[in-house]
Image (tube, rainbow, N blue to C red; front, top):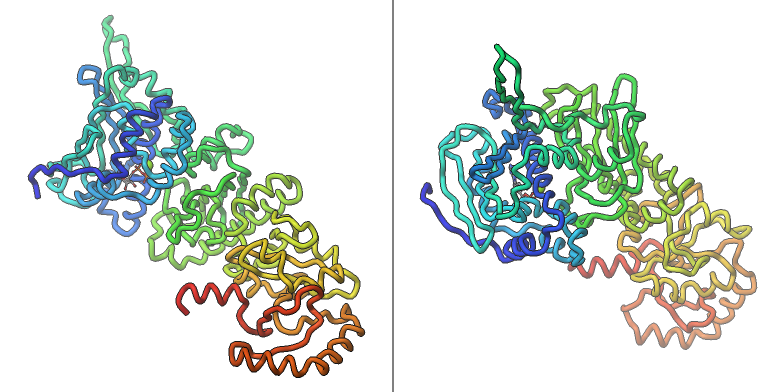
Length: 564
Ligand code: ADP
Ligand code: MG
């Protein structure tokens, strides 16, 4: 397969390219951020893969990114010695396969150039931003561990197609050469490039190097020397003292780790001392990412060991219900040469994770108490994911439950603002249960005939209509010693709150209405298990009730929809 082939871009990729070239030129310099961020990702991937196989470094373990320009040829070149790509990976990653973010990217576009260009990094279309400034892009790459002859050259003018050919490439990694468009000579200037790198990529913990010319006096003549110079500060922000970090630096770092362009909602920077020492720099985003509900969503926390990147996106670092948390955990106690197998079952890592979870819950408690507006934002964006908490993290379920917010008959609004503590504070004398109803929508919950009696008695009912709620109440069966009770199941036992007169009434009516009930039973046959007179309705003539231990109606519907 060493002949040169021409392949067509996938349709959505063509659209992206068109957009890059014709509409996103107000913030051109972001292409450099994207290419550097890809180089940094490639270095991270190499480090992780090499955990089990040092040989992949091929004797060159000093990972870095080089930025060079050639004024004569009008080219700008970005080189990394990261993982590299095979021919198939090049074909799939850049060109022929639509990525999951692409469609979401189009949906998120606003038409406002400045805003839209910020979206690029978030949706996995960063590479294509090269075409904002280049009319031809050449990418040469060779995967770590492969022979030199397995190099690949990809080239495209960003129109309908690209070419692929095999090349010899002795150095592992990826080199991208941008042939700049007319009028883009700004990017052939060392000072300009340095300032862009410092602006966008300062916190990248990998050195980004450029050539520097300097003149020394030697024997009366000006002697020119050229050497590599690290442009970014390449330091681990989280390892610095809090007092030495500005809000801007915290925010820039957040944008880098999260690919978000907005400010975070809140952050937590903390160092845990003891025999298991680690540092946390974690953030809550202000907005849910587009893929929060994808099954294979990457988790957003990266693990470092003494400032060296180890891995990211694992449930080993943050449980699923906190998958929206972004940031870094840096351990002092794990060994640097930790292998992937060890990471799978490391006790230290488990402890770090459970410590990190506690810190995040603490941050949320703090927001709920001291910054209720921010907490409301958090709940709107992430409440549904967070409700998976008691199911996944049984140990912390009381703390998690305290942080939950629900709609309720007290506010009669679909906004989820009522906490279980609010509910308990309003409980009527003699009430020992927390009543709730689950339904497919807020309107269905609110208008359910099951609420009639409770409304009459002035008892508050939580109105649950999120998809996850049925699972939630299956796991969260009590809070602060008070059982959670569905008002739609079994005999609604109001305990000491029931009226004696109601009970009598039911007994009398049951006798009186026996013939009618028999008739209804006959007509419905085995469609129902039982037909009963009850005091739970005040206005409606009849309602359906599940067995006390049976599935709820919503759960039944879900089971049906998956073919059970
Ligand atoms: P994203 O980085 O969000 O995945 P990009 O468009 O920036 O989206 O890159 C697309 C893919 O191309 C990357 O996921 C990666 O697989 C591959 N890629 C891009 N640049 C490099 C690089 N320098 N080294 C290795 N792989 C790369
Ligand atoms: Mg990228």
